[in-house]
Amino acid sequence: MQAPPTPSAWIPSDMCELITSGVVLCLALAGHVAIWRVRPPRRDTVALLAAGGGAMGVVIAASGLGLWRLGPDTLPGWVQVVLAAGAAWLAYCELYLAIKSQSPSSQMLLYAARHPQGVVREDLLAVVANGPAEDERVETLVNGGLVRRTSAGLEPTAAGRRLARAITMVSGIYRLPPAVHKPREPA
Amino acid sequence: MIPLGSGAEWMLVAAPAAGLASAVAAHLGLCRVREGNRIVPTLLAGAVVGAVVMLAISWWSVQRMEPPSWLDAIGRVFLNCLTYNAGFYLYSSLFIALSSSLRIEALRIVADAPAPVSPAELAALTDRSRLATGRLHRLVSAGRLILRGGRYFCRPDWLLLVSRFYSLWRRVLFAVPYSAEIVPPSRATQAQSQTGVRS
Image 1 (tube, rainbow over the protein chains, first blue to last red):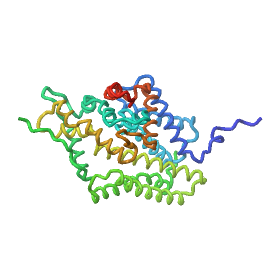
Image 2 (image 1 turned 30 degrees about the vertical axis):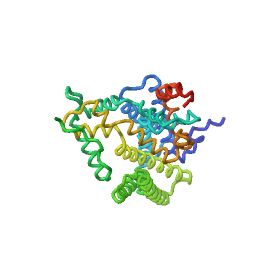
Image 3 (image 1 turned 180 degrees about the horizontal axis):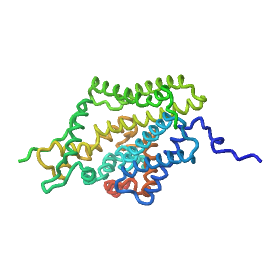
Image 4 (image 1 turned 90 degrees about the vertical axis):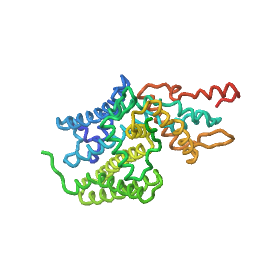
């Protein structure tokens, strides 16, 4: 009796780096959706990075144990898989933040698309003005340890000051216009 | 023991990083030469330069590696394209955030202020309506919204498609009902009751 074919006989093992990267990304995405459907984590960026790292670890471990036979057979092949899956997952993390916070342009387009008879300017502007409140923006900076609340108001932490200095420096290198708004001098 | 691979194979692995470095260098050079905040054209030019470098190195490496089959060569070059695109997407997102993110602007305002800033003062400085006006102007200039008879109409294009995909993915992840996706402005309700026209 003929032995059943091994999985590598069904799938083209020539593209093992591409297939392995795809499997890592699918695992990470499945874990991400499963966790978010149960309960979205508070520190979502950390959870997303952990999901990506976990998926990579699972595939490497499965390959080491002989459960995954389509892994690359050289070290550069594995490095290519880690780089590709890592870069793609980081890009997804960035995309997730954009999806979560809803871009103002997307909000306007979707609102206009839902009204085929057209919308007036005030309504389009109000769609964005009704978006995430200022408090949410400040909260992100406070939770990130960049700004602290004091009785006098909002103050930058040492990390926030360093980051703002770095941003100003990089903006200068790219010749981007400086921050437009300046708070008034204290009385 | 896993084989360490040939020099050409390591060159293939390094190709996306080399492409990304070239893209960043080209973009930086263009930004410094063409001052004036032209974000998208300079980013696109940088992306093209980086892609050419990445593909040239990948092609050169694959020729020297003698891969087991053409399918393997295509797979590895495609993987490099994926890595390069993801890396450049990250870079361009960070660059765009640097120039237009309200959170970054808020941090810079708080950090540069000579005294603590009150949340109300910060809200007034990073006014959302200013952002809304700027985005509306950008959408109309790009032809994505068409102004006709005092009303704006949406023209189907790729950005609308992307926005719909984002909206769908938000519903998958957060179980947000479609009706709650976009909060209808209160003015719309007022306008409807006054004019009888659904906006």
